[in-house]
Each structure stands twice: as C-alpha cells, then as structure tokens.
Image (cartoon, helix red, strand yellow):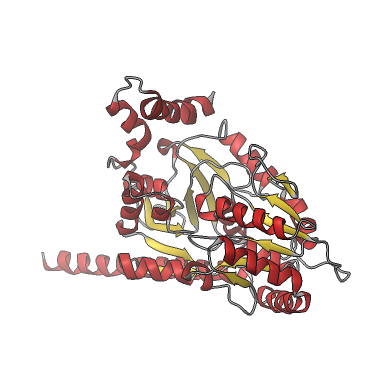
Length: 410
C-alpha cells in the first residue's frame, strides 16, 4: 500500500490532468508533486554540544534496484563507517519500499551489507552533526531541517540537465544556492558548481570495487560481443542515439552481437543481433564485462562509473566527447566519439577491427583504474568533515569567550 499511496496517487493524478483532461484540481496536483518546495522549517536547532560529532544523516529518494547513484552513496557510507562515522539513511517519502525495514532489507540484498538504520518521513529525521542532501528534491528537506550542525550536499550530477527548461530544472538549480557545503563527483561538476553558483565545494574522483571487477586470468579471445549500457528511462545515457548507431553497425557487421544491459528493453523492437539482458545482478557483471570486445557507454551529463568498471575488467570503452566525459576519459584509455550515429559507428569499428590498438588502450585503461582507490576518496571526504567540526568548535570557543568578556564588564 505504501507504493500506491505515494508514487501511484501522486504521479497518476498528474498524468490524468496532463494527458486525460480530467478536472483534477491544479492546486491539489501541484502541491502533491511539489509540496516539499514550500519552506516550512522543522526540528530544534542543535549545536556541537547536542550531537555526536561523528553522526551523518543521508537524505535520499527511495530507490529502485540497480540505481547507480544510490550504490555510490551506500559505498561511501560503508567506508565512512570504517572510519568511525555513524550514518543514518533518511527517505522522506516511500516509493519503491514498503517500510523502513523493507528498505534496509533491499539495501542489504541488492546493494551492500550496511549497518545503517533507515528512517522514513521528515518527522522522523534524527538530529545529527552532518546532514547530506543527495538529490535536488532532498535538498529542500535539508533546507528546512534545523536539527543539524552542518548542511552538506553530495552532488553526483548536474541535475537541472535532467529536464527541459521547466519547473523541475529551475527548482533543482536553485538548490545549489542554498549555501550547503558541496562534495561533487569529479572535476567537471565541481568546477561548474563553483563557477556558476559560487558553491563552497570539494571534489572526489571515481574508482571501482576492486574485489568485484578485475580482468580475466587467461588472455581473452575475441568474441564479437559489444556491450551497450542501455538505460531508456535515463535520457542522459543516450539510449536512442546508441540504439540507432548499433543498428547501423549491425547492418555493416551482422556477425556482431550487441548485449543490452542496464534496463529491461523487451518492450522495444530489437533487430536481430541485439539481446536484452535487462538489469544484470551485481554478482554477474564482471563475467559479462570480461567477455565483451567493446562497450558503448554514453554520458550527456556527468560521467557514469560504468566505464571504470569495464576498464577494470579489460574491456575497451567507447564513449562520447564532451567536457563532462573528458575530465576523466581521454584518447589514451578510451575511444571517444562525436555524439552522432556516424561518429559512434566509426569508433566501434575502430575497436573491433584494430585489435592491437584496442588492446593497447585496454592495457593503459587498466593501469589507470588500478591507480584509483575508493578508500582514498573517502578519506578526503572524512578529512573535510573533521575540518568542518574543528572550525565549528573554534567558532563556539570564540563566541563563549566574547560572551564571558561581556559578562565581566557588566
């Protein structure tokens, strides 16, 4: 019932208004979908004396299985726990999960084993030293939440680009002006937030799970298989462009096999040579990546982590050009294509037909990704948090000294 009450009622009401022409109340519809935007502060103000300085609230949207953004957050939570931080997961509104207990079970079954309690609803958010928004919608809850010392923003992508110029795009853009301390994924995003919004932002880079992704033990023989990271509901991953390019590639090379992974695309009319793998379980990804001669991963906003996981498995990566990609990928470790059908087909043919060149890039890519480390990136974040606490303590000491001096003069 939780799913029906939250996701179903809110979204279906909007669909009825927009597409079926029913006489739904516009006010009711808008408030159902965007009610959290109205500023209503809640919670009691706290100071460093009131909370444990290692406590972190992570305010996030409810999650579906296979969400890469949530996996990144859970990965960071897991590593921060090893450094002595206590994390709580806050879901303001249930969509996919039935309850807090169900959300905890789904995290442990489909993502990572976490010792982190889930809280549901803004009224149940506990006080904490640090509270993180993790998506633009959650930034509005954090704006209103008073029971935290520090307000932070874990920014993995430039979310206004997820929409046409619209209510959603301008509301998401506004969250970068809330004054939160930013922690951004990579150079491109951190630079954009600093340059365009003057956000106080630190950056962390990308890595991969080294226990999960590694190259095959034996040298791999060509398989004529190409992986396509297929996410139709995620427009920034360029499904339609990739599909058109791969269909043309199959016309030129019908001996190839295209493996579509990342989403169930059985509703699409796939030509011969394309196979729908759907959402592949984490435990099966390494074997899939290791068997492919190339992988196409498109990113029209910030880069996905998938290219690093593929490179760690020895699979050559083809991606699109753009500052949002080239802050990490370059021609030494990947094949970068113009984001056109012709450009992508040309790049894939280059990988398939120039085996020596593709192997050289794969070797260079493997060397690069092996030099990265999630623990190093987590230490950067932990260090920033501790520095924030030290500055806060110093400020409290100054205020207490000033108060004492004023009292002595009375």
